[in-house]
Amino acid sequence: MQLDRRQFLNIALGAACSAAALPAITPMSFASAPGDRRLVTIVLRGAMDGLDVVQPYGDPLLRKLRPTLSSGPEAGALDLDGFYALHPALAPLMPMWQAGELGFAQAVSTPYRDKRSHFDGQDILEAGVGADPKAAHPAGGWLNRLLPLIPGAVFETAFAVGTDELAILQGENPFASWAPEARFSLSSQAQILLRALYEGDAPFHNAAEAAITISAEAEAAGADPVMADGKKPGPVEALASFAAARLNGATRIAAFSLTGWDTHRGQVRALARPLDDLVMALKVLKRDLGANWENTVVLAMTEFGRTARENGTGGTDHGTGGLMVMAGGAVRGGRIYGDWPGLAEESLYAGRDLMPLMDVRSYAGAAIAGQFGVPARALEEVIFPGLRIDKMPGILL
View 1 (cartoon, helix red, strand yellow):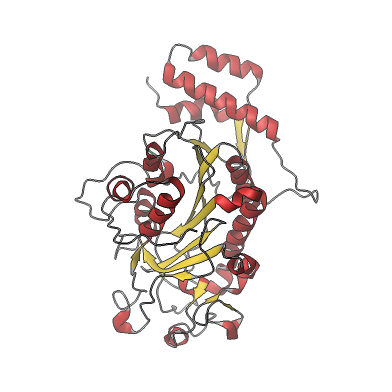
View 2: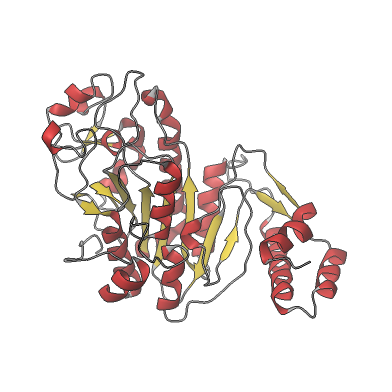
């Protein structure tokens, strides 16, 4: 019987791995490259409501469409520019906004339209391709296709743990994958056994060596990190701190996801936790990256937005146009990018959703071009096939 690498890892290492008791474990993915520029991509799973996160309170129709949801400074949101206001749960990020390290792009989307399926929307977002089912699309995720275009990008290890695999970095180009919440330990006897079993099989031998390396790194780092105040970090803090530690080393590209953005009912309460998670992730990345924050771009993207109107249960349903969050010392922040399409019924997409005016891939492409020098032609033909960039958004310093 032949096993692929994933089956091998599941069987050979399954007894050595135990995951922390979480509803879902978010895997981390990494790639290393030369230079000081860093890129972090956060997938916000569940379709974040961009109209609530960055509220266009200057449009008088917002209150009519959303009578019970917060809208603007009168409801506690923080004014950003006289037209948009930041959700009050994101108040801890205001220093980043004021320092020009936090920005947003409103009315963005992938090419995905109409069906509004989380699974399909996330697939399109992470693959970075168009939505035409008849078109020939390259395999793998767009971050994976980026790797061979960066001179000197190298493979660290090949390992993944978790139920929520990141398609954005999957593909034929090797990368490292790890979940900080996972506890992984291989005894010296287990290491000898793995090496002996697969000495003559190059792919499995390399996988075994990768697993042994991860085990050693985990042992060196300690299985249970403790903060300066003696408390153990929560899962999101551990996630972001682990990413920052890698980025302070050889890693230059990291990706992880934050869940909980599907707010069909009771949105005021339901949105609180994912917003807190986003605050924690960005603050910890800045804190732990230290001086490297200045060379970092963080992009937080979601599969699609939500309806312009609130529904009868105080929530919002699956929509189209949404919001992109960008942070980091290399970002030209302190501003909201993109034109405002308006909320009049004739201006809404399908009479229900915020009209998308910009492909979210254009902003991601601008970050890639600025951070790693990838030319526009490669962005349009390799990384984001089908994308046409007439003018590169100036989101970086």
